Image 1 (tube, one colour):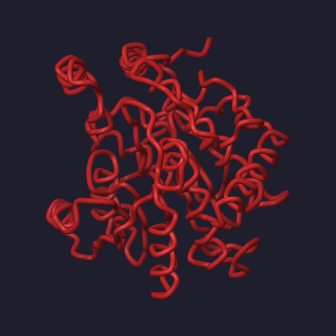
Image 2 (image 1 turned 30 degrees about the horizontal axis):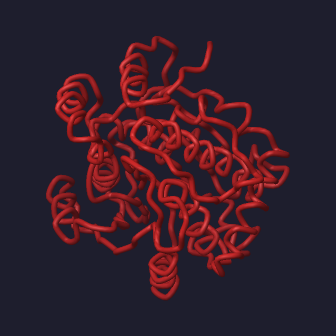
Length: 336
């Protein structure tokens, strides 16, 4: 099947609508009887939209849910507790565009000796035009990809996510799971330019979705390389289960920065045709809870269908170069 393009908001919306009509085989949702009692699950960007839907779903299964959020404290946490009937829900502030805030967040998890069974990296941004974070990096690149690399570098080295390679505290008999919310837009992205890696990109309204796709190509390439590095030569018996998915078109607040003239068009289309956050959280729930996904690593799903991500994201040489280039960039900023 040819890759769909997502070059502007209109083609992105059209692609989202077509995704809903896909008839390829699906996996079955996990039974509601499966419980997560005694498990600690981190969800980033959980104050609204898909992230909140994921937090509610995991809390309903009895998990201790940590909502990592830039805003919505404490109201969003109270809503998740009320909706799930689970009082074991907490919120921790983190601004994923800010390396200093990320460091403070990771310090707190380490100092409290929290050990995560599940980490769902959901938070993302789609600015209407190019913006930079306080470190001078393009915002989508920083939040949608780079923040995940920085957070996981800390959580793995500190052993907050048990692992043999970096934390030396493997829990191989009960491997933790790391889940990334990516996007099918990574398939039609422009290639990653390693010669200008990390340099700010200037774009306007027409190109925002294009560079969103690039940020998700960075993330999907990273997900595959992380899976390889945490499970060297042993992806059939993983030490850490690393998975990613595109949840499909979600009626969330990701379009909040769309131009004023476009919002009256997008809002009713999204409300009518796109999935609710509750429904869109089902594939995340599958990756977190199914026995099958706790015995393998490197799986990519599009909604409830298992499929391969793009060839560019799966290439091991490309993944290794992407990793080393990311480390070099972060070293320049004094982060690693």
